[in-house]
Length: 348
Image (cartoon, rainbow, N blue to C red; front, side, top):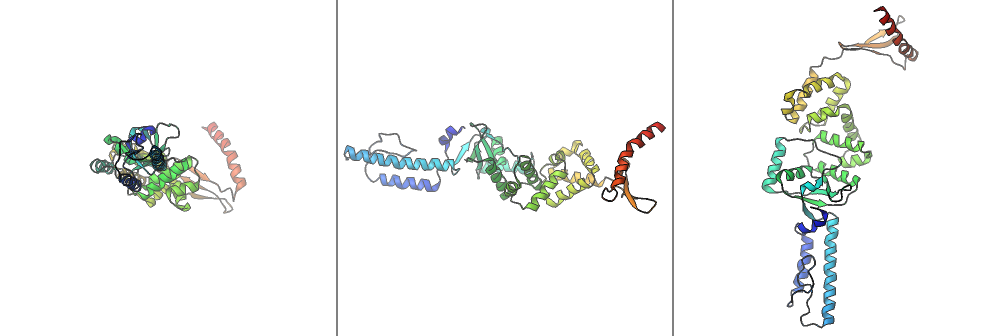
């Protein structure tokens, strides 16, 4: 439904407006009425009454009543523009937020949510704004699950339409999701990361997620340490909290071999059939099968000074030289490695 049609399917008026209209109508009903000569405004009956009055008096009353109804209609339009009136929209005319906050899922919890709306109806409206890039469409700020459920059921979705800036949209989107407890920790992490990638400042992200600076730093650290493909493969993992995700992030950061081990598990055919929380557990289990890296051995000079550390695995050897204590030696090794390789090639 386009915004031009928005008045055609208005939900019942808010109580305070309905009461005001009822009082005015009761006042007008005290004397007999003739049929209206002017089309009623916003459904108000008997706009003009000239029974028994002079033409001038009737005209004055008509103008007064017209002004009153115009004022009431303007008030209704203002409330609609301010997002205080619930309307029904075609879900197919609504686009998702430009910053997604949910991961795709088809789990049993969502199926129960759809069935609840089917049997009881939509109890809470979603918030949308006119799509700034497509004037004939809308863009959702919050209520993505309700919108998706309405699409599946093929029914109109109840919505509040409000003009919002990008900043106002993401703040409303994040704060509403924080009040509702069905957004998982990792979904909030990804939402915060996407806001940062969109160029929003830390103050906006903190306001949107309702978190302190330290909490946001931890969330963005988790997003940076765990590859996005693994997060998306695991999914929202409801029930897995902050500590478990931070532990997984630290495990990946301390040994990048674990990333490949996790990807091997994710690539198995049966992985996709698991519930999201079970997928998280499977990834964690895969890390326990990665052999621990041998502790780096100190390299000692003839004079007894440590000049570096050597770590060995089956796949590689890593030489570490501390530039703070041996800067000249570090530069020497970097220059000599290509020469040593060439010499090795000549002797082979």
